Image (cartoon, rainbow, N blue to C red; front, side, top):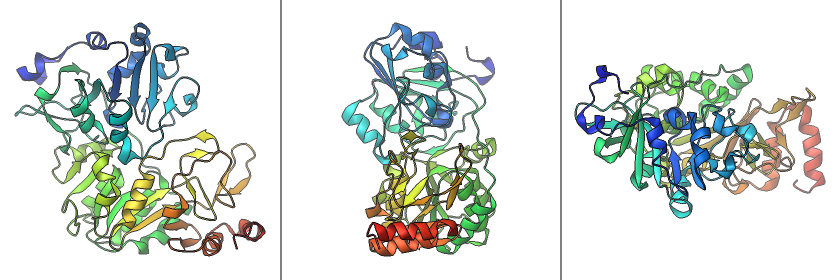
Length: 440
């Protein structure tokens, strides 16, 4: 039940039901699409392993699971539901391919388009903020696909979490757009900002000169993007048009580095599809008119992204072959995450006047089993490695040893450029193999 202190309007209170009653609305054969990341409907997933035992042929589609819920671990549940995710997280990646969870590979900008074509939702089950005094709710810091799916679905169920920030952009809906509400208050999931290593900082120092004053930036997640943000304190009037908003962007805004004054698409605004970070980040986006969230079909559309002035996208990778093929989502056959928006943003940046798509990567890694160092710049990708960005679309690669500009270059020029920024220990071997296979 809803605590009386929240004094919800009649347009909401008369639609509030209990979780068990909401499960009863699901029919055999239904497809349920859920919101993702911070906006993941915790109530829905928490008891799904029990509720679904009464169903047949129900599809559940989500992304970025934030918890390893029992439904992801329960054997034989696939007899009742088909659990699919559009992006894997550490919490669930071990279950992929074991008849528990099935990963759907596709570019983030195309998620909703593909849903319409292959599996339109019968039910959208998401999360929302408390309603404001005018009767509007917000879907919070999550708009990758949620606003579009809400409009597509035959039935809408939202879990009201008072701790979810009220965000602007495409996330605001009238309470009349929702069929049922469930009250479910809980602390939002957070992730810490990974402290950059010395190698991350070296890479960031190489990237810094590639970002001009007035550029619009897109940063991924992890130590390298955080290191890049630290080096940008000397920049002026940066803008943000990004798939994911993180703490570093909030920091740069408060330091006066991000102003978006020179943005040419959504000027004066920070644009993102979702936010994931600390509670401080969620407080920053709450009722903040500077930050707007829109679906990935808009934000990650390469043509729209390319309308930004000097759009600069920075993503990371697992390994890169000497012709420019990038793998960012698997180690060989082992699925790690997903392609997400890597391809979208890398191409979109290159469509911008003065823009650049950057892949930042450590030159080496350490094998967990053998403890041996290995090169991440390789002659050929590991068997089973998934190509996240093809060599025909590659732009710039950066390691701690320098910059390799590959766009418009021949295979031989690419191979030589990448070998130069590989770890010195592996350069001779890479050069020998490149010549042996007639790349050079």
